[in-house]
Length: 448
Image (cartoon, rainbow, N blue to C red; front, side, top):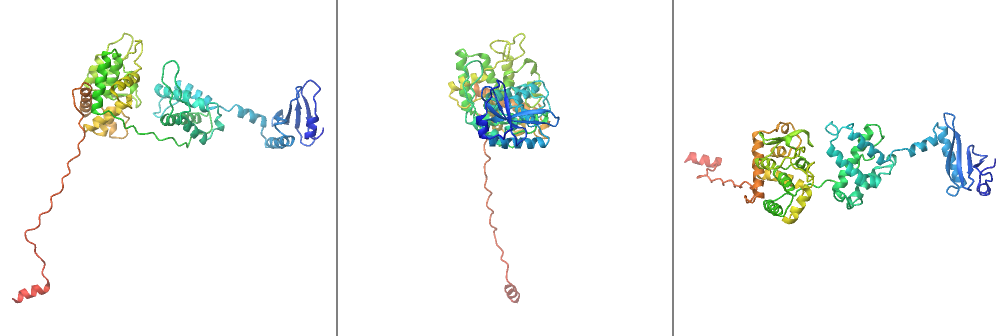
């Protein structure tokens, strides 16, 4: 057996019609494999701890020089001496799950109810719907093929930056749904989803480390858009105009209901007859973002609900044009109304924020407003807020005020007035001022 050198490898030929080998005389197990096609590859043959023969390819001649291959063989033999199996290590690396594999695992386990969310209950279908959307639209296209073990914090932060810059933005060419636009909000929420699903994977033993830990997420911008009194009036005029032009009355009813109640979009669109409590003038949700809730609505909202037609076999108040499901196109109706009313930046959430702002303008406390919106309890006192008389009064007053604006019956929502600043009256000077006399003056007075 000769020592493998460049000259030996260059001159080596395979005339056997099958793989042939030349083994190095200096480094045991290091050799050259020659295929019948003429391809030459450096290999290493060794025995693992189980005394099984292993033959590992180091690399092709041309990519590796003879000395580079020899140096790599020495490193691999060092691993063998430490009791490791380089071939098994390579196979394990190739079988490491990718981000796409972990995402698919997460979706399957969450749908089966095996994973618990923040409330220590199975992840809600609505949350899972959004997670799936972010996975399919942002995560998989950008890093789906990357192996978990190879991913680092900078890679996750680059993912966030790419989404924010619109790397995954695309127009939907067919089917239902809307365009994927990306942006900072989508980027931050996508990283939150990725971090959460990887935490589940760590806890369930699927991976060892969550590479999204420590990633700085883009701060969410606080939403400040609210409808003014004039904009409510303009919206009401637009609703009456499109009604005469043949707009779907169910869609208009959903938009009006959103404005009167401040409900979340799906809470309004998916409202069911069985949840309506006409005696309490409330909606009893079996489940919401904050769990089961009983939330009051005003008389105007209840009247709107009762004006809807019931469809046999359909439990929803606001039914779809197909009559077998709930109405889903409220955002489109809002967009058309705002175009006519010349309103910008109005979404279903703006109605929610506007109702809260209107309640604040009318003097109601933060705790009462939280009750109006169905926010989760943030403290002991707020945990006692149910449908008490104060909450009923607030709901009715705010809802009726918005209804009057939409119907053109009210001029403005009363804006909060700052208390008058009264300057304290200047102290009146005393009628007489008595001056303290010195000791000399006192003695002179005695002598006189």
